[in-house]
Image (tube, rainbow, N blue to C red; front, side):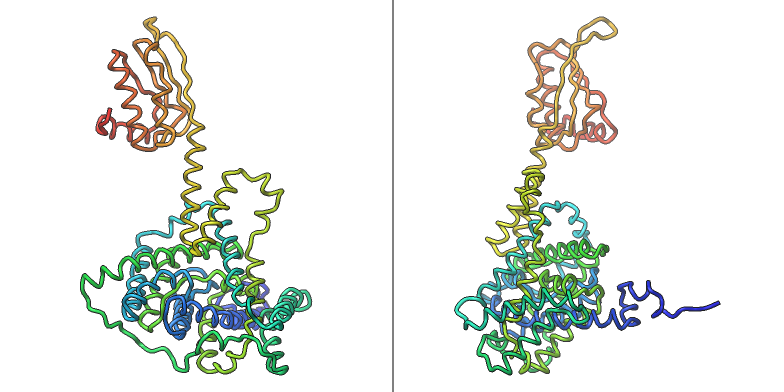
Length: 505
């Protein structure tokens, strides 16, 4: 009997888990290089988000480090990158402007606690109510925003920036066709950095984005009074931060699930985000959530699949900015712009906008996608865009289902030979469809006995019960007896519990 080592077992070699990453040099190389590429891409973005929030660059950089490291242990979606983000920066910026740094950190801490509470309450389960058309719009809007963020690095810059970006894109597109040993974005960054140093080309670099820290993050407790007044100041922003952060993180997790054909624990991801924000706050960071751009670099471009890459992204970030800040500052922004442009191109769902797809897709689905994209791009807030898309989807769905409800009237004789009118109702009865239900009956011409057959329908809400009560009342005023039959168990329970107790009829 022969035995095989884990390294020799093809399944163990290919299975993307943390344990197998430490057993397999090939998997570990992928995770390490992916983490390095993500760390390099995080540096200018973290600095930019710090500027948006009105804080020192090290606040965003330290937040990205603590978020990435913490979520690698606590999160429910392996290989997803969490760090300081623009959405969170926009939400908390007013606190920094009006009340100062200590109140901002207090807001981050409270926001993290709220995220944990929401996770325990089961908020992650609400993800199933987000339609596919909203997800497609979310992805397309994100791609547009990623590309739009690069425009600032293309305006009023030396002419050498443009050919450097073109070369970077060519390397990212062409190198994988030759070899995939080293991630193409990393090769592009190293090659363009070496070129600018050797050729002494004067182009914008990472150092121009802001001052890099030269020390490690330290424990920090905000100096704010523990009073109701403080809670009134920070609570609205903390709630907004919690909701925006959770929505973006859970949507990103769903997107990575689809790309990798694997599942993830959304509830764990939700409370993991909250705990990571609490940890980040106590180290003086500005908080954050999942970053789709960096996650796409990690998962889609670099091929990472485990928590190792997420952990190393945070570690490499700290090592680079603290230990090798002088070298990192030399990286030309053109190299990072090339990486992010290709991320935006790869993120966009091109199939969704093909003429063939648009002709085949229902107009309502296309409308939801367009609304999500437009609102997101206009507000620069993915959460607002997603909420707008969901509301439009709900409205269009309710309208469509309402039109599927029909009422058919027949006259027949009962066992005693008396004539009665039988109304057969088909379709789902809820607020959108039941509001017009009362207009489908002939109150004047109907005989003394009316039967409403609901065997082919279902009562979903109090609006339907109120409509049935209104119909019954109108007939009773004319001396007509109304009999409601065919109710299924749930509809009968709801009708029996609410009928006669809603008023207004």
